[in-house]
Image 1 (cartoon, rainbow, N blue to C red):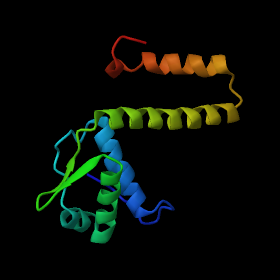
Image 2 (cartoon, helix red, strand yellow; image 1 turned 60 degrees about the vertical axis):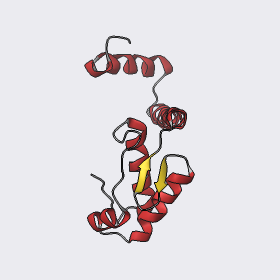
Image 3 (tube, helix red, strand yellow; image 1 turned 120 degrees about the vertical axis):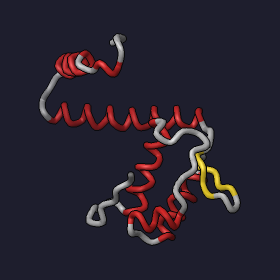
Length: 129
C-alpha cells in the first residue's frame, strides 16, 4: 500500500508520514482503523523499524494516531484536525498551481477558465460547479 523511494531527496520517514497522513485525511484510513504494526510495515517496506516508530510517534504527536498499549496504533477520531489538514493541503496545492501557471504567463481569467473546464469534466465531483 505504501511506497518509499530510497533515492528521493525526501527522507523515507517523511515520504511515509505524508502517505499515512494523506490516507487519514482522504478517509482511506477511517477513525479506529488499526495501522500495520511497526514490525509488519518495516518488513513490508524494507526499512528500519525505528523509522516506522518515528513516523507513528510524530503522527501521534500531531493528533492523527493514538497508541494503545499492546495493541498498536490506531487512527484517532480527529475530524477537526482532518478538516484543518485538508485546508492546509489545499492551500499548498493552490499556491503551487498558481505559481506554475504564472510562470507560464497565464492571466487570472485564463487560469479560472481552465479550472472551471476541468471541474466540469469531473463527474466524481457531482453537479455543483
